Amino acid sequence: VEIASQLRNAIRQGEFSVVYQPRMDLIRDQLVGVEALLRWNNAELGIVSPQEFIPVAEETGLIVPIGEWVLREACRQAVRLHQSSGCDVAVAVNISARQFRGTDIVKTVEDALAETGLASRLLELELTESVLMRDTARAAETLQRLVEVGVGVALDDFGTGYSSLGYLKRFPLDSLKVDRSFVADITRDPHDEAIVTTIVALAHGLGMRVVAEGVETREQLALLRRLQCDEVQGYLLGRPMSAEQLLALLLAAE
Ligand code: G
Ligand code: G
Ligand code: MN
Ligand code: NA
Image 1 (tube, rainbow, N blue to C red):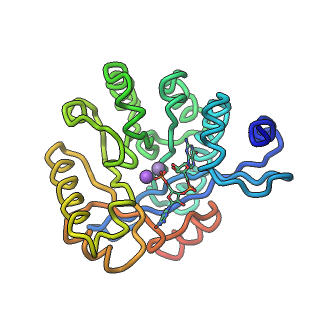
Image 2: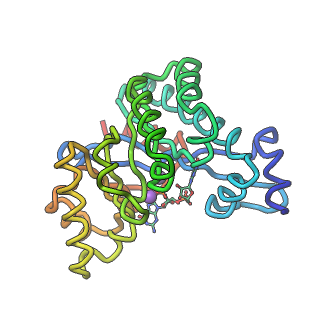
């Protein structure tokens, strides 16, 4: 209740910011993308975690204006990053169920690209299984239109939801993001290693890339490399950081 009322004014009062977590390509050994993650600092509530306020934003419908704000902000900062560093770093934006199903997400994306001037190949959307599996015929059609716009689509938190493999085949997805719950114990639990091995085979068989999330140790990284994951994301590679910090990181890596 408190969160909902404070959330209502948060955009107008400039309380949101976006941080970026790097994603590394394991073949090129290079930062190839970042995930945009929303942060909220409210005068009364202090810093509120997205795990707390995103569900409230979903319930109240506030996720629609908030999501549009995040998308625009991420595109704007990606353009600046591209211009200042010369690097082709794609930005991935999380899209919630209500945005994907209840609004014209294709038009929202087209408008954000047109207004900011970001090349469509530098934008990716992250969707969860539950979002795609609800109304699969319509989801497949929306994904196809997004492909035509030229943006990438990743299936987030893969393995934790209820993906039907039959539908997976019909969705034009660029990558599967292996949920961090499978990565956490991967060097100790043979079951996790078996699951990730299977996800890699499935993704590659369907022409998709695999991104492992929540990579925290060198041992996990070495194993994921051996299992032929394409990309990794996690605290080992970098914590979510401001656009300024990200630019500094890119310039230092050159
Ligand atoms: O940033 P953090 O790791 O605390 O994120 C917690 C959760 O909030 C994750 O599931 C993440 O996907 C979600 N989240 C973060 N930013 C956004 C956003 O901009 N939009 C949506 N829909 N979810 C987000
Ligand atoms: O659900 P989604 O994949 O969007 O979640 C992103 C969340 O994961 C963010 O809140 C981010 O802070 C968190 N995260 C990113 N890297 C790591 C990591 O290496 N370890 C853990 N425990 N959390 C991470
Ligand atoms: Mn995500
Ligand atoms: Na995830």
